[in-house]
Length: 216
Length: 340
Image (tube, rainbow over all chains, first blue to last red; front, side, top):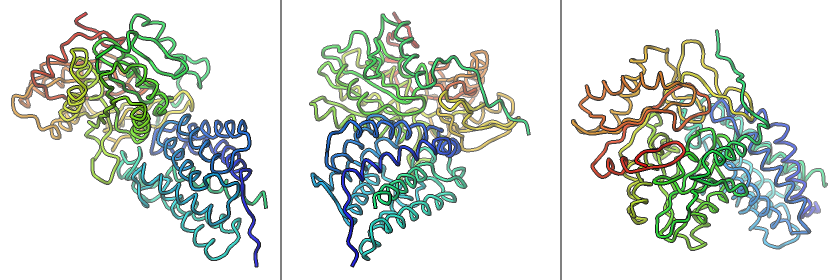
């Protein structure tokens, strides 16, 4: 029998630091992707937002993990602008509300956090799978994580599979024609480009996998 | 294949501070009309809040100057919320602006239809309602270059934004109530259509790189105002031919009745001189009259720009007597001023 490790506030802080490092390194790549089918600011906005999140969490004094997600979400809403600010901001807040005031959470609860984040993104952004948006990376990851956890897989391994599903979803946006967001204005010309929002979403989920693995 | 120059020299101290430094300059130049609230990054009409007057606020990414800060003043906006370059502002800015200008008669949010602007304004309107302020929101979506359907983000908001801010601002100045001012914004939007053409890309200060490259002899048809590529490229023809495409695109969607009176707005994207904009207006005027539409009012100049992009957009607004008299009403802002 596998003894499942519990995750806590440190996991969330570590996740946000991993995201900040990752979007900083990939900043120019995200700008390049966004220049092709958007307005070229995605990498700059995400880098600014997660830098502020790391600062906000650094100043926090012992809040539980759900509360940290809510603070992170609020920070994104108030610093990023664009569509990604409200979308990821609402996503993290919705995820944080799932955890309430509990001090630790397990793999099944992590899956519920991400499921709530996905529901919030779809509700606010009115996007569905295949619209060439961040949903194309987030939804497959949530489904994969839920399945693997339900099958009794350890959370680090399940999250690795979920991050891989997000990356596959990200690559699958290339042939799609955008139906939501700024890329949709290009119509058929959006085909052949990888969606920047799906790309940063894959980075965020890979960062979560690293945060969980590094603690194990 | 020859391409245009990707780099451009800009007046900058710190690329990350360009918006704040520009807003400080706007406030220094027009201290009689407006003030700059640095903490909230908003431009507020100097005499706001005006008790009993419906207030109008708008906002969006920077890089479109004079929109929106240049439209704050008598007979137009009460506040503007500028985001980073080409990035929508955050809800805290709109909430602060809403609170700063509410004179008790309610506040109208004029929102351009971009996913980011719509989402951030939506969150701000919810927060304002929680604080007991009456807020209505109207989304401007006049760009015929974008196919509209239930399954897409819909048309972009472009030139009609300027016209709606002027006309509804006049209604509010004249004492119209919240429902009436909101209705005027909706009417202007419903009766306006726009189409833009780019002759060059533009260079956001933060990245320092052109958003797209136009091969020699090619233009982008159906561009927006964020340097995003248009729907298709075409060879650069004579101005008369390019204007034909613009007029046809707008008229075929607006479908004005024969003999209709319109306001024709020829807008520069930032890098096209008035010399050419008036040439374009001359073509537009001729073609409209030939099509049985009378341009009884016009606006020619760079009012909703895309940094230094060379290009122009055409907006037509089908007028009625009420909209015409509101357009003629006095206005005193940094960018539009008449009747005072």
